[in-house]
Length: 418
Ligand SMILES: *Cc1c(COP(=O)(O)O)cnc(C)c1O
View 1 (cartoon, helix red, strand yellow):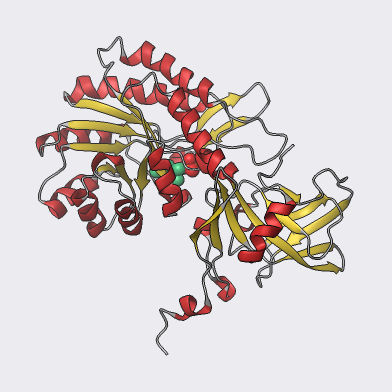
View 2 (view 1 turned 180 degrees about the vertical axis):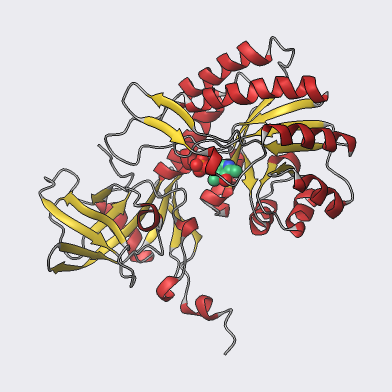
């Protein structure tokens, strides 16, 4: 059973200052997740989490994670600029992008970020752009084919298709990239791969780690390059549905440690640092999209119209993603009404829930959409001229801070030439 991290009374108090819809984040939950992750990998002295900025590109969140010892993983010019303004520098910044414009490589290099190359051709592109290659550099691997872990005890599967993904280099290209980078002056190398998204299995990271550890040993022998770190990237998931099992990050960290002891240590590579680039796992459960029911409609189905739309949370519209809904103040009421909960876009996919069993919803009720802390606000857009909402932080002491104000029509018109 999913419980929101705020009550109806708290929510109504917030609404007096900040009208719905808004995204609200839970400081306590975020810090707890970051600490759990850091503890799970404390066995590795060089460990660092590089929070995937694209999941929640909000300075208030990035600064909080910085206090917990995290770095940032950026993938664009503005994400790099935001990282810099939040006080991240040098190797606290990972730059994992693809189809990268030259100016982005230039800024990443100026900031001293670790650059993660997505393709073999980027080696010379980088060299031509910068006139040098950085001493520390990372390459992204794509093993192709299908990545599968079989079925977990709970019957959930991890399956993804690296062979259909645009990212990373082939095994052969990796050898070539390392050799070329070394010749151009690179000294410390990293390996990165992202093989499956939103995994619900404590086995994903350990299985990925085995692939990358074995590859690191091979590449080190083959090319003579010093492997300084392995970047396990993102992909550790969260249970969006109430019946799904949550990952246990302590078990995951221990699984990676075992692979490390079995593969890297005997190869004399016991100094290699482990990096992660989690976004969803650190943030998703600790964000709510709070919205008000403003209409009900009875035609061939029962509809509840809310003041948020896919412009605030796109995942249901584009992936059919499930986001749990709680009607505040009716947490324990029977779910004996079936609704489509919909936003106001002129787009029939603008449905937060279809045929969802919920308590009876009355106009004016406040609804919480769960697990919107990552890839929620950040995927928002302005279709139908909808304005982006505010982002608020619920502090551990119960106070609420504005991290981003809601857009105004002036913001929307600001780029227009009349
Ligand atoms: C999106 C992304 C992440 C974060 O993924 P999550 O599923 O949010 O953990 C990490 N690294 C890279 C390169 C990404 O593109």
